[in-house]
Each structure stands twice: as C-alpha cells, then as structure tokens.
Amino acid sequence: MDDNDNACNLNELVIRTFFASKLAPTASKAAHEI
Image (cartoon, rainbow, N blue to C red; front, side, top):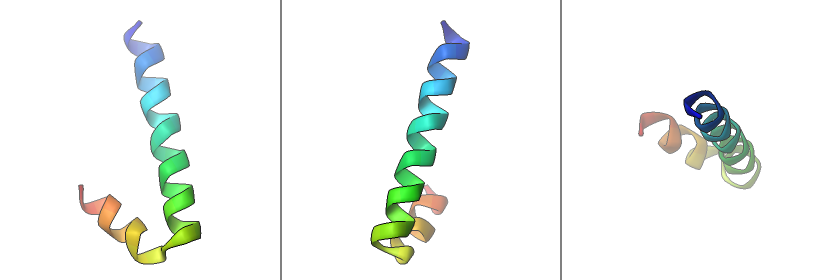
C-alpha cells in the first residue's frame, strides 16, 4: 500500500511540476521551495 501511495504522490508531483513550468515558470520555483 505504501509503495502505491508513494508512486501516486510522485506521479502527482511530476504532473504538477510539469503544468507549473508550462503555465508559469516562476510557479515551478515556488513549488520547489515547499
């Protein structure tokens, strides 16, 4: 279960970072600091 949860979280992080960099490059930097 934990491995699956980690995979989902990682996938979500990648998707968010991808969209953030696409929509607003500055948002990607902000997301990195969190």
